[in-house]
Image 1 (cartoon, rainbow, N blue to C red):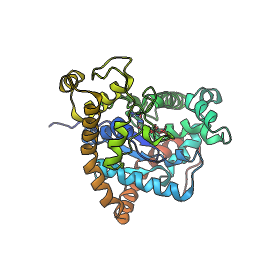
Image 2 (cartoon, helix red, strand yellow):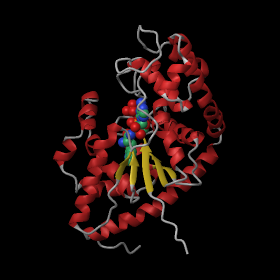
Image 3 (cartoon, protein in one colour):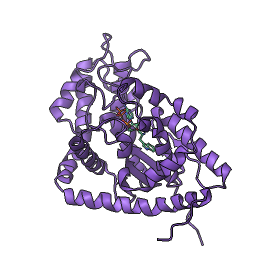
Image 4 (spheres, rainbow, N blue to C red):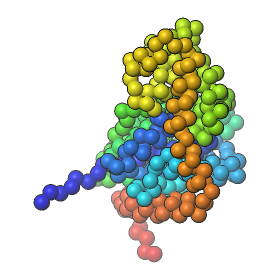
Length: 336
Ligand code: ATP
Ligand code: LTN
């Protein structure tokens, strides 16, 4: 009799800290959607991480619900795999505290995100910003994750999670799966439309630099028309043509065309035609997402049901790891 090999476990999370951009969509969400069938996927909104930067309560609540609905609209299926809010699964904060005691001050001090964010928020360099990677390690290790899809900016945190897991396993006995980074085939880094040497980022102050997944078609068209290119006016891929390369990357992510095919399509045409075509492709790609989103966001009851079930499933998986960890450390067993 054939025995099915268990699916590998993938964990990933995104912070609900504002508008979800085309960068998030092409670089992360779209890949998550395709991974759902082949892996045991556990996805979360990392809302505990979000409060390392001060949030307005009403806006934070709204962003969290909107992000949850938007992920469903993009194709995350909460019936297939748990999709939940990190703050609703208490094991995350508990394991994070424990892992803090297995993480060195020196290790956390070396994190480039901590250095960047403390420079950016010099008036609020809180301890949460410093211990952010231990919470991220807890997120990952609670589910015995094999693979973690992350962008380049989160690689250092994942490396630290691996070190913490190995340290704990070495000090006691094998407890945590040591996770590997997962680099998806598609979903190149999408750059800012205004400063194409920087990545497209939802926290950019200039709204013309990013496309939000929920931007209206007119706004998408306008932003692409204004996108920075160069004076050569020829659609071809070259290292120094960052603006054009980025537009080609976006077009390629959506249509599946190679750079060579794109060059052929736009041969003899200027940037004006090219920008309009890229904008149209993005508008068409996002149209069904926007339609599903507007239905979902008006059905709060359904959203609540989905995230509640997600949290319940996540709790029942993660509590097993937390209990194991606590037992190994020597905490007395709970008798209630
Ligand atoms: P912030 O502006 O707050 O840094 P962000 O837009 O960069 O936010 P994150 O929450 O840091 O988004 O990232 C969520 C996911 O989206 C990560 O997996 C990240 O790699 C991916 N991602 C973010 N921006 C891009 C981008 N421009 N291109 C490709 N992937 C991206
Ligand atoms: N720090 C990540 C979000 C995040 C995450 C995780 C990603 C929180 N916990 C665990 C992968 C695995 C970010 O800001 N992109």
